[in-house]
Image 1 (cartoon, rainbow, N blue to C red):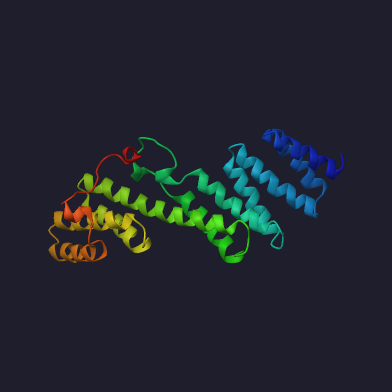
Image 2 (spheres, rainbow, N blue to C red):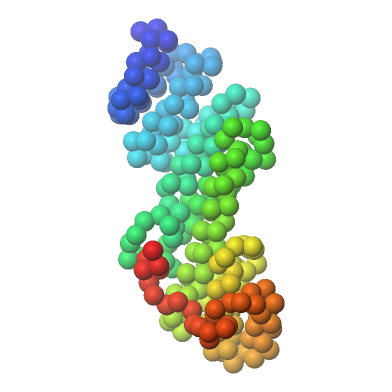
Length: 234
């Protein structure tokens, strides 16, 4: 088949969600049309097909190769955006799935890599049609990462590991500002310092909290960190 015919066949399979049939056709097209815009399109489509067939590692490897080899491609913004999307949907940690796995055992690698991809897109291609969505997803990821640190801090606080709780709550406060999770992070700091008898730090944290969140229910009602399993919040 000619390259154009191969691509038409591959697109038909993709339109029918026959990803396992589309991938080998795209691989043939990539080899047969090497060095042409059609080969570049085949690479990007192959990455998407891998993603839709639940093979994110293959999809990301394909995109990394495409981005490295085609720095001037008109599809570069889409490739970077797709890289962010794949990681975004792969594992956002606290929001990825409803399981009974302890939050402290999870990690946010995929969410952070997703954020970096979207950040690259926004920086390099501010006028791309994919940039507005990327910005929204970046905001969501920041909130998710901050909330993750709070859940881990809460996990440690419940178990009396106050130093560990302090360390994780401080990450939320210092690395992720202007997100709702900071309120509880400060309260966990306050309670953990109190539990350790660190009065000066406790009082300093309380003053910061009173200034930043004057109507906080944690202070007004004498609340305590939510120690329910994280999956119960939904």
